[in-house]
Image (cartoon, rainbow, N blue to C red; front, side, top):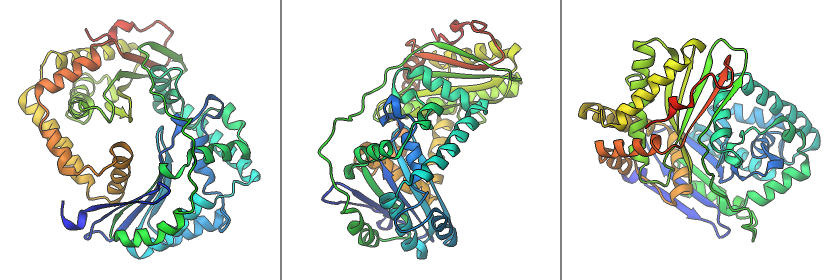
Length: 425
């Protein structure tokens, strides 16, 4: 790591962490205020509240109306947004270095001083309900929600991040403020910056602002790890295609096998030269959209295979998926194929390093997961050390242990597909 890219960290007395990475050749600064809080931290009665709070923080503070927030953010150019995941929430922006003070002031105001007016809650409730409906009306998105609910059945990880219409309809200011005060504790807050900004400048602004966040003596809301349900569930809907989602239990972000799993995913369905893309789309024309990805978290993970196909060809599609997975389990991977997959991942890592946003996100996530910076070079070294045996071993564990689920959405009847088509043994 060069001197300019040295990552720095300051922990305030109340536990708030301030992280930075200066990159001199960039003209921009990416800034994010993170909370180690997500949808998995919700109760059954308040599903979707973490995401709802993310929306509400843009609706007005003690210092700015929602219109003023929008005008001020747009006036400095760049990009700004927020997102809620299953484990984290982030409010972020990227601007030219000269606009950093304004961005820092706006984001910190949103995070600390939002007022949650009852009228705004009512208005935003309708917006979020529309968002829920939009996902449910988008089959290629909704089938992933169905898979999550299947594999993590009975656990908050299986619930939609957006929540359900009935839970969102029940939110009021007291419920929102109770969740926020309980979960947004200072030790769960991280300020992260990457780009053309010194750590001293970041600290000069955020140390006095975030030192006022009061610590709480409560850890009664500790997270519980989800199990995994291997099953088949079909949701019938009048569509042209059948949406197929296969999920198999995969290593978590804390598991040493995650590197071999990343290589496996690339070989299987992670790019255009992958086995599933070539066999299902290019050779057989079974589907336009076919891919795999790893959905990984601090204590759990799922390797997902997705395809959309004609109902008459759904069974054939599953048979080809099973065949390709079994081929990998049996060691049918060439040395050149393995090296190409590792090079693809290495290139993706280094190319992402040219983005200030990617660097800022990595900085925060590494702190949340590992409590330290993890360099690109360290990751590449770990990837390069992955062997053929490692990939075969992780494939056998993922697909060969019975922990595989299938969610389908479309014009089929329950039982039209044989669960044995996703038994990889």
